[in-house]
Image (cartoon, rainbow, N blue to C red):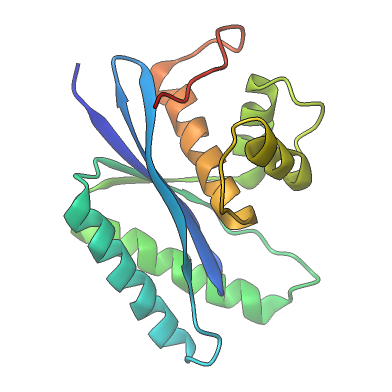
Length: 175
C-alpha cells in the first residue's frame, strides 16, 4: 500500500494549529503536531507570509500527499472583519497547495468533530469535550484548542480515507 502523509490545518488569525500523520496499511501514525504563533503586531499580509514560511519548513521535512483544512464559518461575536481575514487566509492556503499540486480539501467543523467524537464514543461534539479528551485520554501534551482541532481533523481524514467502521478498535495512535 502507498504511504499517505496528511497535513491537517486549523487556521486562525493568531494561532494556526497543524497535525501531520501518515497512513500505511490502515495504520495511523502521528508524526508531528503543533501551532504557528502569529505576531499580532504584524499586519495581516505579514502574518500570512509567516504561515507560508512555516508551511515551507514542514513540506521540506515531510512528503505531504494530502491536506485537509477546517473550513471557515461566520461567528457573529467575531464580526465580519475577522471572517473576511479568515477567508483570505483560506484562499491563500488553497492557492499555496494548489500550486504545489497537493490534493487539498475543506471540512466543516461540525462534520469532523461529530464523526471523530462519535468514533471515540464521546458524549457530545463540543470543542471543550474534544480538547479534554485529547489531553487526558490520548495523553497529547503541550497543545491548545487549535492543535487539538488539527489532530481531530487529521483523524477525520484518516477515518474517511480508510473507510473505518465506528465499531472497530479506537486505539489508532501508534508510537
